[in-house]
Image (cartoon, rainbow, N blue to C red; front, side, top):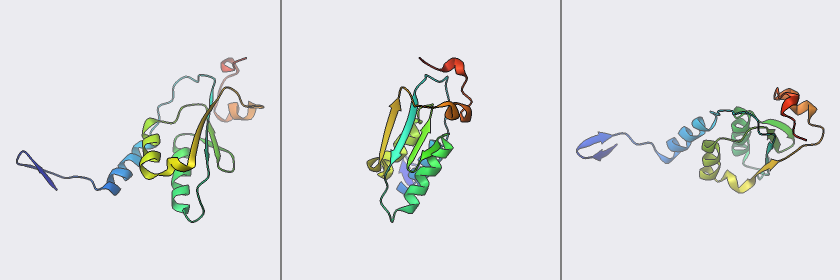
Length: 122
């Protein structure tokens, strides 16, 4: 509880702030595809399974799918709240975010994300 101008307010703890940010990070507003792929590559040390699980959950909530071990892909940008969460939890030290113009043999990915052939850039 904090006081300000004679009024009392509840304040979230640091843990509560992170939880709030984690919840907001899963909300993503997709826009029309710009023809680029977003890949999240991570290497989180053993013994931090909870953080690895949180990252995977966050990526899945943002529509990312597993491309291979520790590599997730999506045609849309990850939302700003998710990046803030990664920074505030220290996970960003283990993560690389890549934007690629193309991925070879992406037909299966286009199907999974329901992207029309019209969007394909040459």
